[in-house]
Length: 477
Ligand code: F6P
Image (cartoon, rainbow, N blue to C red; front, side, top):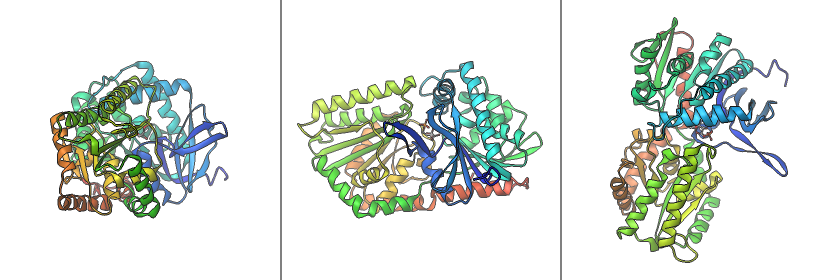
């Protein structure tokens, strides 16, 4: 590929590439990157021609030679070990992540983290500027890269730039604590369209932007430095058709039966699938199950709980604490309630292949999605899409973005353990006709608001608004 035709009409910029490098004895192995961002953006991008994806490989000092993967040109950005510690583990995941999730853990405001965040954002902006063809569209993703839109516009004023925040944008009192709040807002305002998962979080941004920068607001549009920026709501979706097809396959059916056997043929299976993150409410969920056993409201002899906890950000202290807590609770329940050979809590601190997850979704009578705060939560949507016979029950946190669309779930306040217990009990005993009524309605929504529909609606708004036109937003606000 020559440098000239290496320039793309469409460039995605995200902290991670869609695949991450793992070093094994046999050499480098590329595996799918964790998290909902990749799960949603990758299928949408694979349908586009001549697209590039700028991101980090997951390694310190990794190679930077671009390569092709699933028809997309991947452009690695090199991070040094110190940048991983300060930009990724520090500012991104020990300052912004906890703060944007309602400050569940105390955020750290360290100037050396911030300096690294600025420097790494500049690296991404420079890589994107090189990858983009004249007049191209560049779509920047998530909280790790909020400064990129402005930096990129300074380098390449010819580009159409979109920015999408996958996680919540916090309430004003929280955001305003950040010592570098003005720079963050101005960084995002370098985009033509800024997208959020929910209307409440879009509103939070519209409120703070004029208070910390020179932006003025008029409805969904902010004006800044002579440019208009559309601030809209674009709830992210999944590839529901692929999910449903996999769920219906004979391979999945046999995997479901294997899992059922392994779990000792329980009457009811309860499932949680999360990155091992303190925002996900895993420990409270296990405590709720334990109390239901203690109170005789759930029978451990005919119940299996499966908790998949995907390893995540293990060097960040808050993650080590939650891991210890989850493992203590799971071990305690098993010690008190399991019989030889079959643990009532089946806890896996592992990343499972998607096919195995779909088999577990098929197997689970009850899906537990109880984060304290979540931008969207695609696991909830994957469960619904996998229930092609329309049975099953979803217990869903009110504070996950998915709760806006999945109104027929059993909604809970994840901070209220009695509410979570009641919801689990209701879900376990939900009559099949009621399961079907709810699942059919949720299935329609999940298929309608797919990953492709999400990407198309964002890019349509960007095509229209990035051309400098008067606003006529396609965004749902
Ligand atoms: O959606 C939130 C998010 O941080 C994504 O940006 C990221 O891809 C995913 O979760 C996984 O996190 P990490 O890249 O830190 O492992």
